[in-house]
Length: 127
Image 1: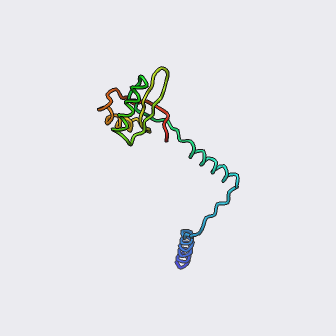
Image 2: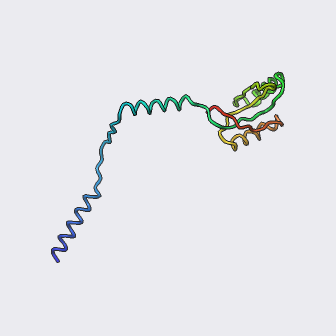
Image 3: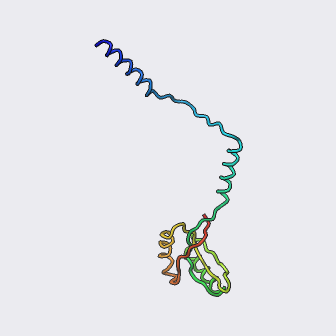
């Protein structure tokens, strides 16, 4: 019986040491070429600001009409970016940079009151 108690105590002590945790500092030693590659990728990602998304097209037609609509839109919605685009033979005015269709549709509901022909268009947008 005494041997069983000694063996049990021995296993208890070993298991207690197995669960002990130590605190310390982890040092990662990496190659300078890997650090250089990681920094290059970070810089590339920071410069690449174009993603697939959506813009709202308010109107297309003559240059004069587009410029008038642009002025009216900027007055009504000064915090939304406008883009006047010439796509032969028409001028177009598109607004916003929306990452999702849902986000664009919500904005469309605000704009359609004043600009009834507005539609959501897929577009490469600024991130």
